[in-house]
Image (tube, rainbow, N blue to C red; front, top):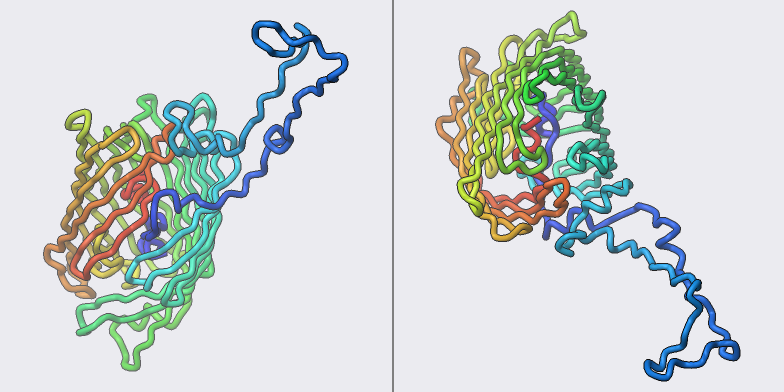
Length: 420
């Protein structure tokens, strides 16, 4: 929900005990073959053939049908190659995963929710996944949200798409330059609708296409004295934006990339022509690169630049986005975040990683915010390959930033919500 105010896809900072805790609950019905116990054919003792004199075994007719092999439901959760705990076979059969979401984001004082992920995985292309997610979350400071999100491909992969719709309320702190401390505000979203469509060029690594961003929200602030930004609060605001993006993607895997590059530039334009009460523009230029250094080591790098211009509400300002930095803590008119991640592959399933980054937020010509200066954060974590055929990892990161330590339960790469 914190990223809904920035115009990016919503993401959750998660906390939990182990990668397996992500998918402890299941609700897929058992097939008939797994529910019915196959019974061996009965043998009439009086009519049975005499025991073989050498082996001592009872002979059976040559045309007798062999007993049926029982199909066990639990076998779907183990890999057919190495026998390890794995969800690839289960996902290939369809169904959904009720995934617990434990929020550790300090900005909303933690929280809990459940998201049901419906996954469709073609047998001939297991990484061409269609994901449908329906769920909700409630946090410790009274924020809540629920909604639906879907991503997939169409026309034999020529088009890829994402869209989501949600409703909720979020309470956060802003840090305007004219106050000594934080300013707590609440946005009640009657609706938020986000979507994008990318058309892939003949070189499938390149794509481009439109995006939409429509919201209706009621903002309020608990502050007795008049503020220079009172026009942002105590009223209903409708925003409507159309945008366009150009993208490049050579990653080997969208879930947990190990090599390749994902980069894009895009802009969204809020205008009265699209039903917006305010006229402002947002711009993003992001780069995510992954490179193997050896069979056991690989390097990841991200650089994110976000800017906002025009008559924008203060709570729409972008913020530094690093593991270990509180969401929306360092906002500005122009924000840059960069992070490096080094991964050591211990085995085909297990990996350790370390990461560190720096971000800056610039107020620009509108002195709503303070210049942040350089903000540093870093930490370490581990991963387990929970779905080999999809190339999907899960694990835990522990990060330390200016506000102290926090840890996250990751499902896919930590940068997944910024990447395509």
